[in-house]
Length: 336
Image (spheres, rainbow, N blue to C red):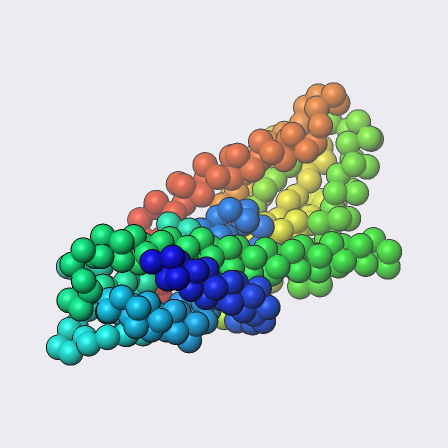
């Protein structure tokens, strides 16, 4: 049995080298925007298959070697039951991953494969030891697969962050004030204007947070061009309902912030309602704009405007729950 364990370790070493050197394809880059890395790792694993994380040929050779030494037959399927490899006699066997899932190979709490094992040709006295070896192989590949997956996603995530930082740095160096897609203030310049307004000690000042509802649904179902058009459409509606002295910035992919200096009574609520109504009244073949809106007012010069915008963001999330639970919301979104 020691020779089998050494063989497993040797195959794992080969697999690790292959996984580390694998090319990260652009098809695995997902547009998550500002979603935290932890959530990204949890969500993105569903887009991976076995061959993305492992070299199936290495796995096949490993199980062939174990079969020759012990007589144990092994079949591995993808998460939905598609056969990935088989060693030994599996005549007449059809995997059923629901009723008979076998040994589950899980990565980041998601089942990636099902391993079926037959001990018909294994010496009776050695079956317990062989079971331990198979379990060790599965456990080791779970760790290897998770390591490979996290490394891939971290590389992509780091590249995206570097590109974002480079772009923001370029904007600062070149004096680029406006967001390219919407022609509103970029995040960097909006924050600069916010600091200026804060230092001016003018009160009251209102902060408004506007978030596009279900932007990702449009992106997933209609593509980048239509989701960009959705962002531009909402930006135009915001601009059309704003006064010249409003400070408006696109501060994230589907998020806009607005500063309203010296708002009159009812002005903030009127602006928010006008933007929401403008979105709800717009409709075409693909996009049905909808926004969640919240506002807060800075009334004391000692208050930081960032805190005011945080309060506005909180109010926006409360509005989002209300909007998305309103009758007819999903019918309009899905064009039913």
